[in-house]
Image 1: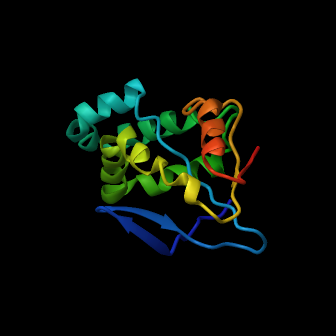
Image 2: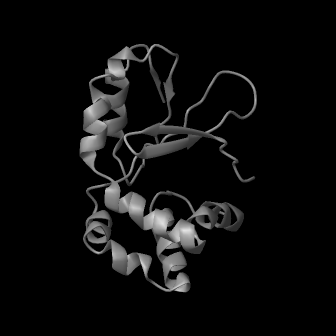
Length: 151
């Protein structure tokens, strides 16, 4: 696996999303929401500063454990290293806990009403065993976006 260099930024109400274009063929958009209602998210939201101040080796163990909850199968070491790397160092650690602390279902609820206006071809790929966000949410997203494909 190679590192993704996402060179573009979309900013909306003081939040941003990094994106980029890779390869050839029809567009594929990969977005994964966050499990804002999980006990871990609620705990970080309450104690963000304590988590952000954790020693690096503890922080890295937390990130690894958290990422493993997203996978049904064991994640290869190289993939895990590349996934954890952006969340390390001063900026990465702060960003990891900040994005969890700021995650609120209200932000997705605010834009849900305009999903019906999406006019570009869209394929939604959803893991049947997604432990963070159940497949029913993916099916609902598919129903809200006319002409979308769901796999």
